[in-house]
Image 1 (cartoon, rainbow, N blue to C red):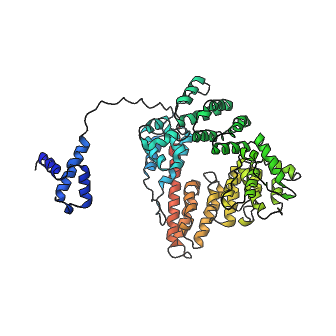
Image 2: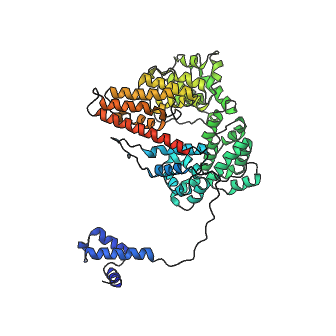
Image 3: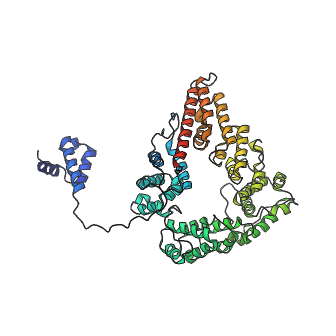
Length: 529
């Protein structure tokens, strides 16, 4: 049969594409016609759909992508990035046995972070794959967009799937005007994309904080509520006393979220007027004589960011008390308690009212995190070796992780290492997540020792899958030699559960292999001498 005859037959039996699809779904036996005729018709219609467009006038050619002066990574590093973006060599997701191959997709954040430290830009050919990865994983977006730079923003305009990049914060570090070039700064601030405006605000703020506030003030009243919130949130970096007038005015914003963020930022400035007002309210409620929660939430409290309605299961007075204490400067408590330090204050009994101690200490924990106060954080953490239920500030591992984030890196790692030696790994996952990568020597050794102890106790490695995943990404590659000996021990262990030895050997093999990949990956990113 000729091509014309086939097309004629297709038109006779199946008039259009929708009818063809209906026949395929219902089956050819429901109507006259053979399966072969259906396939012939599908081929004809597909060819028509692909080639049947009328010629049209070409659209305007887009402007070239902006120049990005940053260097590309070395060739070996570019190949590694392509491999990581493709996810080759990974064992897949899901529980159960993963095999001994490294999970390359989990190493992508470290590659991006290392590339940023060296000041590289993304290779042009890999920008689309990088944007796809950032679309799929929001945790990658800041670093991926920074690496993609101005070219990534330019490319995102042509694909609706990458629209997130155009409103994704300060990720697109293109050719921003010099902060001192007032005319160029004003033009980009008025005409730029949201991501460009956030990046510009950060650059101007780093150059002259007061100039950033002036720039933000010029359009503040006309910005959308969600944009005002994100601009305000960007002021966390470099927050200083000079920001207070702007933030104080934002307490009257029409958006509740903007008001709450402004109040939170002001409370992080111990010398602000809001912090002083909160201190007076908190000191009236808490002292050596006991705790007396506020009886009402007045208009002044509402303006200063206190949320009136508590969440389900919380009492109103306790809810208001917690908000007052967390917003008060921690420095105000020393005088209130007769010169006592944080550790002594936290250890004092709270006699009046059942549950006041938990509310008060939880609020102090939030204040220590908000005000980045290491002395109070250490007092509220207490001894890492003590039972978690007896913690002076909070037994919550999530809250403890936040307190740890305030401590200097060395103290943080030492505290978590002591916690692991005392309590094992079952509760350490959140705490390990705030430690600096690669883990300090003592912390890495504590993790490896705890894994070895779990193996000897007859546990299975997937009981510690979260910690094993962290270890692959965070252990110092120098630990690989020690882990190889544990792999051999796992293969020959006789006192573990049946089959557990093989699983542990496999897990340690994967860990050693991943550490080797990480070592190579970082070496590849090092610029040539």
